[in-house]
Length: 263
Image 1 (tube, rainbow, N blue to C red):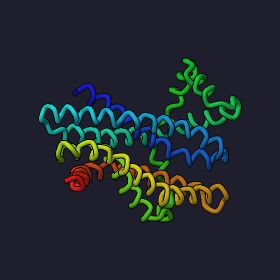
Image 2: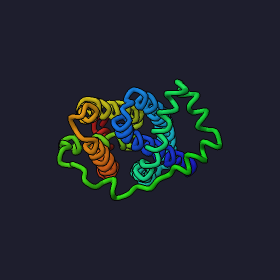
Image 3: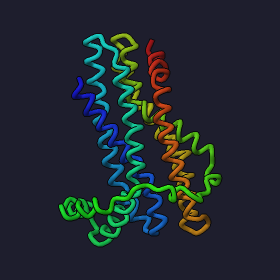
């Protein structure tokens, strides 16, 4: 079970790392003006993240199945997985300056190659990998100075933290709830994860993505300064960290709530 836990920890860390880097795509699209190309390449990162997410549920199910068979309570192991989402987000934040440099270069290359697969193959070239390593940059305080944080709606940030918390523990809480119900309801409880993450995705789509898109679009049209988009990204990734930490608090109550529907 320890090997499965390690794989799941690394996978969860990578999912949230990639998801965090994706927030910064807005900065590149506004700065370069190449919105379509930026989001075309952005879709590659989303695809990788979501594909990796499909492997998460079977691994969690394996841990829960072994725990049921051995009469163990895996709550501490699952909390480690939630911590992996926080750690992945923090690492992603530290990598954003480097990622933006590489992403900007990748967008220009995409305009030449015209193909994402060709771009990926070219990026895997040893000389290109060395070049990417040399372009590494560290975050600096100057990146956070003189940003108009007050211009970003506070309700958007609160909702984003809450939805992130739900999305972080959705699969984990649903699978853990299988330990809290009778045998005949365990599969149904575990299968609730799709519904929970679906609700979180709908909330993101309805309330968070449109408002973020409006701020980005206004910056593209010159109605807002570029620094507003920068402030938006900084606050969204900050509330993402808060959301993953909130997941630790929501985890057990969420599992009990799911289990209550099947008792």
